[in-house]
Image (cartoon, rainbow, N blue to C red; front, side, top):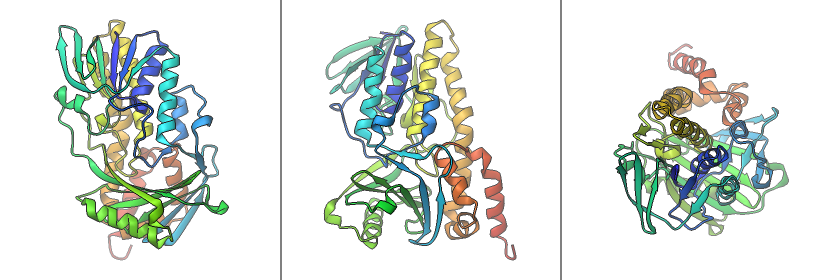
Length: 375
């Protein structure tokens, strides 16, 4: 086997798709029974089409064409997504299953209900021990998410994850609100609450992106927020999850193995978005292993460089901006979010049309001026 990928999420499936398409033998090992659900807001940037030549229409549950920002549920700012690419809403069981099936159509093999218990490098090959037996491959990709056991087995020290909460509400959506996403600041300290509309209800998420936040506080704030919007909590389901947020450039490779997705801590430190960077990392990992199999002994190290350069540089800027934003949230909201152009700019960041490198310097300078009396 040329490559074994542990984890059948978007990053792992994307790597499998490209490796199999290039003619390599690929096996995905997944500990859950497939298809499996995943606690997630479900927002996906259409920018992923630049890395995957697939028709996603069948798994787009809804599209977002308007974004509304609020401060403690008031002081509203609204922006229309008038550009070509609205934000997509997906349900993770269907979306992830779609990517996995496309990888299988290219020749990748998948084995679910298979939990990795140990990985060991024997010469130039990986020996992967699971509850379903032992598997061997030349290369290994850890795509098993924010709580990656494979990354730990490989000797990587993962940064502490951030805490997120998800409240799924089954409720009819008024026609006028079907294509609107909501972002509320100030209600949740050191983070924010975002609400996505889907075909059968609402997904309300919250996350702590600066400092510490506890589980009880998160659940309480999300449920209070939902009640204030008039939702019946008897029609809701609450779950918590970890977010593998980027905290700075890091090594993502070892001999014969790579980390991708949230195992590599690639989630956006402002928005918590993980699908788009996860897919990008999966595609880049496939390219690196393809080159390594062709004889490039520096290909895996180059993968680390590419992720740090093309993703990490932007995410570091996001971390700087987020650090100031969440420290001075009320001032930042009035000085930044309330500006007429802000909502449009941020909507373009969310859909992948702009990067943080396009906005961070101006945003930080404006925020700093707002902290000085008289400005």
